[in-house]
Amino acid sequence: MASKSTAIAWRAASARTRGLSATRWAQRPKINQCFSTSRYTSEAASSNPVETVKAAPKRAGRGAKRAFYGTSLALTLLVGYFYGTDTRASAHRYAIVPLIRAIYPDAEEAHHVGVDSLKLMYRYGLHPRERGNPDADGALATEVFGYTLTNPIGISAGLDKHADIPDALLEVGPAIVEVGGTTPLPQEGNPQPRVFRLPSQHAMINRYGLNSKGADHMAAVMKQRVRDFAHAAGLGEHDLSEQWILDGEAGVPPGSLVPGKLLAVQVAKNKLTPDADLDAIKRDYVYCVDRVARYADILVVNVSSPNTPGLRDLQATAPLTAILTAVVGAAKSVERKTKPFVMVKVSPDEDSNEQVSGICEAVWNSGVDGVIVGNTTNRRPDPLPAGFALPAQEQQTLKETGGYSGPQLFDRSVALVARYRALLDQGPSSSAEQDVESHSAPRKVIFASGGITNGQQALAALRAGASVAMMYTGLVYGGIGTVTRVKQELREELQKK
Image 1: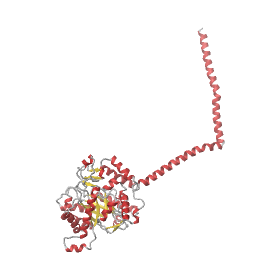
Image 2 (image 1 turned 30 degrees about the vertical axis):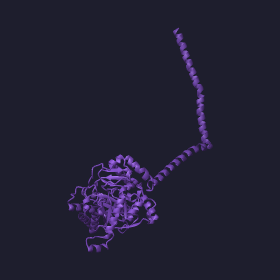
Image 3 (image 1 turned 90 degrees about the vertical axis):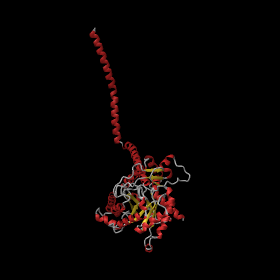
Image 4 (image 1 turned 180 degrees about the vertical axis):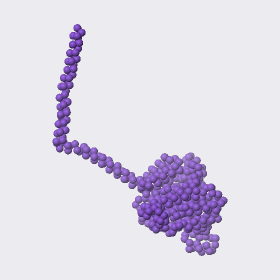
């Protein structure tokens, strides 16, 4: 019985197996047919050129799309490059400046980021620059120290403290760029935070305290700059080519290295140099001159920073005359065919008749070539417009110690320029002999610095007796295109007149 059941089970399993195999076998021709059909289709396609041509447009379409997207991207980058590197681009003023303020609440950090970015962009040719040579028409040309400058606009010291970006700044349109100030030995300056914004006033308060990497560092940077210029001109990087350029043989000013433009270098004393030791103070200034004067068109003697204790006391006639005389003597000893000119930067706070006349007397007696009228002020001007109430945060900022700079300084700066112009044109008053000599001496040059933010104000400074209108805080709030804008506004003002 058991064997019969086993046989039945075996036969059932065998039948199921045979049924499954039969089913698979029945399906096999269909699979083979598919394979055969695929081979046939492939062979037919390969032997039929018409079918091949029909498949080609899809690949061609994909290639066309890639080319279109690639071309569009290239054009976008090209347009973006020309727009972003043009000082006329409104984005520099209305987008980049607010963005930097938002990202970097600390004004000094924003300053460092701006300088480092401009330095990097200049290295790779991505920096903003003035396009189209708008000064070529000669409408703004002016003569300063025997040079014909392309325009009367300058950038004040403080923006480029260590001579990191003079070439990049020259390319945004000014005819004068002032770097520094530098001190004999490196010094950190005052503790941070030390720079504060008043956005509603487009103003700033700073107490940097003349932070400097030292005159030797600046001299090395500027020396390498001249050698890079010589290398680019195919002259080689060696002492002879450097001297050839500094002697004016390359047809460019030895400081700026750009026709129609000049480079000013500001020098100052170290904070720790005793205020009562006049000989030590003179040595500080002369040390700086000996290091950097070879690479400058103009030397600026800073005796007016409000953030170095005792510095403004040096604006008294006797110490100022002694310092300026020492600087002029050192400048005349520079190993260069043409010697750098010497200017002194004076404070807007020393504005009494006695103080102004004393400074003018020191200028004449020392042989200094000119005066930069204006620096930051220790005073706190009223807000603009009249009656405006400062936000609570800015009212608190206004209590910070340091020098104030902004549009509020403009009226006082222009008035002070007019007073210096009148007194300097009169010549020295200490003796009749000096008065006779003054008639044959070159007219003293004045640069105006303080609160200038537009072309109308620049024109007012020039008409008050300045040869150049200098800007600093105006660039901080107006962006890298400020010089181009101010020059265009100045042209328009001149056309009206």
